[in-house]
Image (cartoon, rainbow, N blue to C red):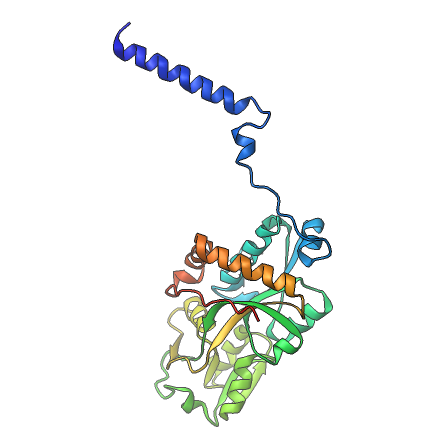
Amino acid sequence: MTRMRIALVAAAAAATLAFAGCASGGGGEAEESAEPAPTFEAGTTMAALQEAGEITIGTKFDQPLFGLVGPSGDPEGFDVEIGKIIASELGIDEENINWTETVSANREPFIEGGQVDLVVATYTINDKRKEVVSFAGPYYEAGQSILVLADNDDIKSEEDLVGQPVCSVTGSTPAANLKELGAEVLETDTYSNCLEPLRQGDVVAVSTDNVILAGLVAQNEGEFKVVGEPFTEEPYGIGVKLDDTDFRMFINDVLEEAYEDGRYEEAWNSTAGTVLPFADPPAVDRY
């Protein structure tokens, strides 16, 4: 037998032994590599959700890049991916996530009433909302900006909206900011419903967070444009029931782990990152 043939036989024998060891069971390598099921303290929201084996998550259904119901019938976007990461850390598979549409006006009522377990929906953290719900995060920092028709060169900043009809969404932070600014606010339930009034000239602009407007521009190529610089800071958080501190801290832990292990950036790049640049996530606020 040549030296080469001896070496091949020896390698084959070693591979056979290795395969036999893996397949023998009884605490073999395959079992050791399995992820252990997460465990949670009894009485916590995490333990209840794990026992139920499902979770109901509120998100937007009409916001490209963050939460949009696509051809599959399932919502897609960055917020949706964040929700999936949280569910996975509870030991809940994607197919056991119940997605519920939460528009701006019903996010707090849905959390308070238990229609959803949490909300991930371009949801700005502010002191008024923290009186009725609690927030994990923030996980993204947006800013309010302005959307106009592509051929509009008259509006260049928020100062040009004073006294002008502008569309935004009922119950949203941007609508409140516009009123404070002195704009005449036309309120509707979703931002997509602001586009037709803009096309018809009933309003001169739509105003909300820059990332939401970027999604609307991408979805309607050549029709609209975003003008000016963001004029507010909108830290996006994840809403949970008021004073459910254990759940809020658990989600904060999940976010920080996702920042570190690359899942956060991967979620961004596969959704909003197809249009917007990646930005390092803000530090979570463990208030």
